[in-house]
Image (cartoon, rainbow, N blue to C red; front, side):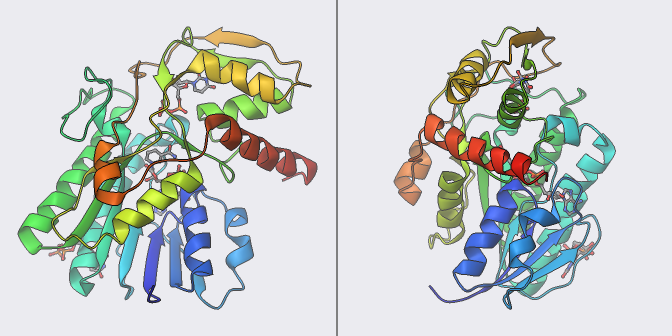
Length: 318
Ligand code: NAD
Ligand code: UDP
Ligand code: UDP
């Protein structure tokens, strides 16, 4: 593959840091732009001395002028706890941030990939979710800043494409987990592992029968890069990327405890947050046929890797 100049927004976050790592190793010239709201320098520290890596502390709600060939647009808090902390800033990041990055891509004729989300389907009536399903989203609830922000971002991507022929690709990511998740991120996988390793109560929200499909980060990145480098100009997405294996949250708690056998944690039940989707599972037939992609890592194996990572954080006091 020819070496490229690549901008990764949100590159110090969980998924972005793995992406920067891969792109730098492949010899690309990488700029990581991140305001460190939920990302951490720790995730990219090992890249700082590489000649082909550059970190810019930058908030994407402000204009950014760089010259690159590709933009992976990931900047946005993703965990409900964090995106609800300052919901107005979340909408600004999703909408103004996308306008700025689309303006950038338009000016320099770069290809831009949007990290959209399964949340655009809301609490779905269709199961599993296919890309042509328009979703069931509350426009005024506590999750709306993220869900509607990401929906508007998709609208912007498609309008820049129709109006200015901007070279776009849109992926809809389903729940992804793995090393480099922030231990206090608040998402279910990191919460359960962190609680089990500290012998704290495992907090199931609701009765634990709601489902999610968990994709290991390496698998997700294979799909994301396949989409970015897909040569068909008429295939712009949106395309679902996720693991179709569907688990109840209660099952995830049991599995986490099975993989951390020394833990003395007990499962406790807390109220289900408002508008928490009851079911989520991707239909990935489009990704399979167009990108020849499907996930390979079983949940148990991915959880073991993530547990090792969190154990490492504890032993090095980070
Ligand atoms: P993350 O919170 O670890 O990473 C997001 C990064 O964006 C962080 O480094 C944060 O500091 C940065 N950021 C936030 N606001 C910014 C701003 N205004 N300017 C610049 N940087 C900003 O989350 P993640 O899980 O790595 O998610 C990355 C992307 O993937 C997000 O766009 C998210 O919506 C999307 N996504 C993730 C999942 C998942 O399960 N992890 C699922 C669907 C979609
Ligand atoms: N923009 C940016 N970097 C660039 C080019 C544009 O951040 O290299 C921002 C610019 O600030 C603008 C936004 O992208 O507000 C949208 O740009 P566009 O050209 O679509 O719209 P306009 O400049 O006409 O508002
Ligand atoms: N959840 C839970 N305990 C936690 C954190 C989350 O039971 O400590 C539940 C949450 O209510 C949701 C599911 O796990 O039903 C996934 O939550 P997460 O925040 O990881 O992602 P999202 O809701 O955005 O899919």
